[in-house]
Image 1 (cartoon, helix red, strand yellow):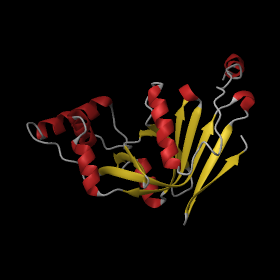
Image 2 (cartoon, rainbow, N blue to C red):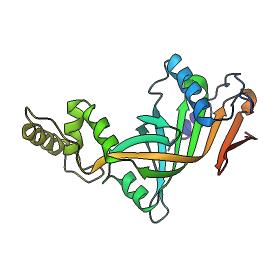
Image 3 (cartoon, rainbow, N blue to C red):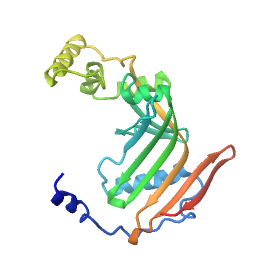
Length: 217
């Protein structure tokens, strides 16, 4: 790697917005506060506000992270959908520990969810899948997610086969495709502040509900 490039990396700096986050303003329910912050992210037209990075760990303890879309939320957790034969799913089916992070650069905000992932009910997966664009439903059948393929042409050929199979028919949900719910036991809100003295509020779940504390940046 060139020295010019390495030096350039350290010149990329900016000051964060002066928007305070206090332990009081975070309220008592992290999901209600998340909804407030999410609405504000939508309001400033943050790009893909429902995009979240999720981290999983395989059976050897090797971590992996990738971006998925949150497609539903309740106080039971965050829901995302995937191929159950994908690497992320195989990780979660052997070790259901998971962490997710939202980052809205437009607001200098991050929210981290940590907990466990569980498969959702097939009925919920069916309902969501039936509302996806037809092209996405066909693509779910055509892609053996995370498997090696020879070329893009091979993938497109598989897509064409599925498209012909379901011509003039409804495309059903593949049995290997569905949702997970991330059931959080910790939710941390991070607000960027000047001088790198950021505000952090951590919610932790126990048998009685949620407790919260302020963390050093």
